[in-house]
Structure formats: structure tokens, C-alpha cells
Length: 102
Ligand code: FES
Image (cartoon, rainbow, N blue to C red; front, side):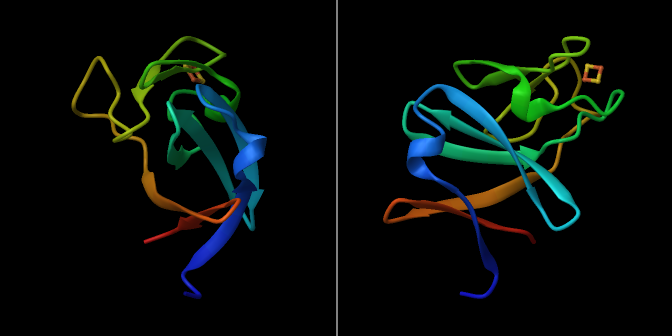
């Protein structure tokens, strides 16, 4: 249980929205795709843009700085298999979204 950390309240991130949270020294981007939560490292690998503040469309987030796009379910960069953003396990317990770093 200690591996899981509170990330947000469910109500903080309604369906088809995203948000940014900081846990310790990590910036996390949380996404709600039709009620299912996904979490990525929130720092874009291009030039460190805030993925949690990007536009979410279906399962793809677009970085607000220069438009790189990632599948929030896997962290995969949509244009190349060679770039993958770290993806973290999340689960909902009651009204709280929990995250696990592994
Ligand atoms: S910083 Fe994200 S696309 Fe450039």
C-alpha cells in the first residue's frame, strides 16, 4: 500500500480533461479518458513543456508548447516508436486517484 501515493481527487479531473500535479520532485500529468485515468511524466521530452496542461483529444495529448503528441494510455509518441514518455500505474480508491511509481 505504501507504494501508492495520492495524486488527486476524482472530481479534480473530470472526463476528457487533464491536470498537472507535483509529487516530491516529479511532475505528473493526469488524464481522464471517458472515466479512465492515465498518468504520464508531465515534462515533455522535447523541450520540457507541461503535458498536464496540454489539449486532450480521445487518448492523445498535444503538448501546449510545440505540438508533440502522446498516447496517454502508453506514453507512446505518435510519430515515432523511439520516443516513449514514462507511464505510471493509477487506480481509484473512493474519491481519490492514486499513483504508483515503479
Ligand atoms: S516542449 Fe513539448 S512539444 Fe516542445
